[in-house]
Length: 132
Image (cartoon, rainbow, N blue to C red):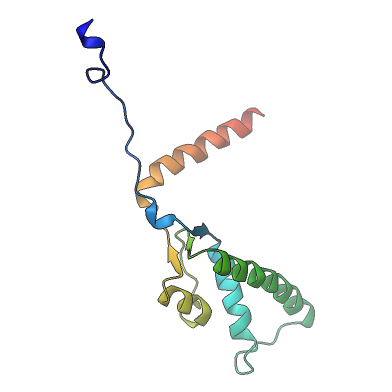
């Protein structure tokens, strides 16, 4: 019975990643940040493109909704994170997005080490959907 003490029992402790930098943070859509930035860039007279009024109105309405969501996220959280993406060709002209990055408010979350786990979860979920 000498080996039954807690000190002698093998413990299985899973290492947990340091998430202290995520305190006060939120995960938001990269698309919404870019669309809000496009809303502001396209309102400048020199950048206003010729779209049909209906198409532009629909885009602008969705972008205004994204704007309010972005304002709320910035007010409520210290840091905003997006998932990695392939940037569009106009990303250099998206001044609001670039300012948020420069100010340290917006950062891309590095998920490289988690890609195998994420792929497994997606595969498991897809298999589960097929059985429903």
